[in-house]
Image (cartoon, rainbow over all chains, first blue to last red; front, side):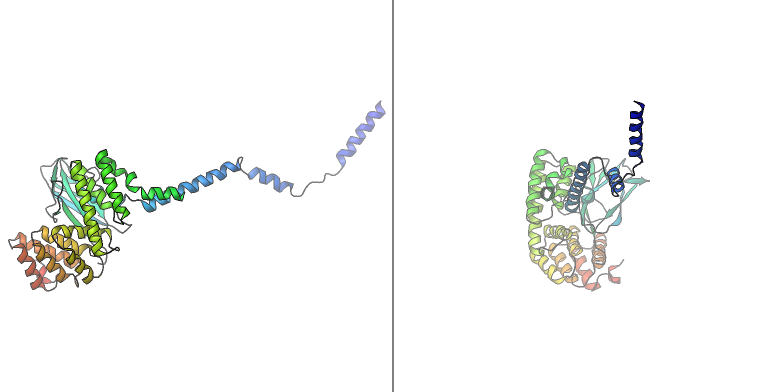
Length: 162
Length: 192
């Protein structure tokens, strides 16, 4: 009985002492598996989604039909209105989508002013006083074609070097 | 992907968020005009701005739609005269000149005689008429000045005429006298 057990132990020891032959590429494969993402398919899908989103956004930026101008340089223009009695004055025109909230004017002793960057072009504009009264710019040419029953002015910005 | 990009490009007016300020009835009419104009190669932005001007000024739908449609027609007219390569500012200024009373023949002659952008030249023509100078006189003086004057000279000329008018000179005479006396705008004759 004991002899038989000794034999088994002896065989186990011999087996354990045998040199183990390892695949030389095993370490590289193991490290590769560790570095690889858990879901390679998911990553590929994200890459496609990111590229697709970038393409769509790029197309929108290139097309952007609702913006004015073509990336030309702009110059700062100051608009001034003397209105001592006014509580508020806004500058509205082609350059700010006729949105009174975009260019509120600041006052100093009844002189209202604001500065707007303008690219070369011809712009119609007007002052909105107290949110209800439209006024043309007394220092600028009037717009001839006043189709909405209120006065407007025009400013023309020349291109550089012209 | 390309299809999506094309859709975004071609349906720009539909998705233009600024037009949401218009009531639905006006918006659909304006969008149709803008899309049609873009389809003919005309700029849509001036049309959008005219619609927004009307909306901000509280104009009714018929008035806004009529103004946008009229502008689209005029843009087409001046584009035919100035050529396919005319810029949006040039077309806008040409519409202003046309509405001031300048004929398409005058616009065509300006295109022929003046090198470079016509925006300022056409604007000065329109602005002179707005100051009271008769359209024929304004066209004549601008045609005389256009070949050799810089944009800055034209602006200075317009200001000088406006000053003379403010001082009491008859508008037509003020323009003619300035041209004859100054020979060249921007010289001492056109300065205060």
